Length: 138
Length: 124
Image (cartoon, rainbow over all chains, first blue to last red; front, top):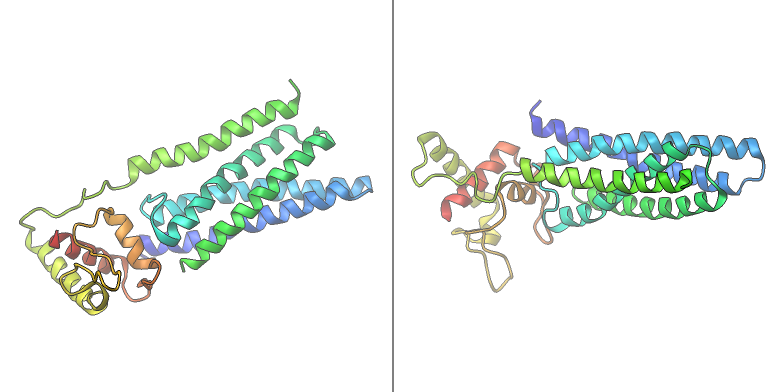
């Protein structure tokens, strides 16, 4: 298998992990934020936490394979540029969200977690748009 | 300082760091524009590559970009001669297309795409 095909396949596969897991994490946490029962809320936040951490790890694989695929053209032109305009803020925010969650664990206040959810929503939207433009490249 | 605020500053640093580090790596790894331009007298192996790229260019690109590579002003098709994109950017553009230009990744593999870029560089 030539290396270009290898990176194309790896990017095509790995890029779905951060997208799907981030969306899943946001939904789990959002529902967990509003659910009244303690156990259900805890379980949902736990699912949100692990989805986010795995999504962030998948993000590194997606970024590395994408960079190798484009020969480290981190902006580019046309649809590739549109993809990159959304992917870099999304990647930075996804990493930041994961670091925040790992450090805070379950010690966050309701207000603090509310702010987290707003940032997670922005990140999810950026990631979805970036995924859309990535798909348009195919 | 609460754990939330400490985590906020750490998260801000981590987010900026990963994006910054990626761009720094990109600066080190990306070929600079024109870095792989061919010397005035390319060795025979490269001449054959240019010839191969020229054939592919005439077959797939010349219809819009003109057989001499200078494009078509009336139809707003850009010239590819003296293009200031890097070789890597040109490869990506040929593979994935842009605006009205279709993608050619199903038609040409990486080596063939690179030979088209080498051919275009030889026109500079």
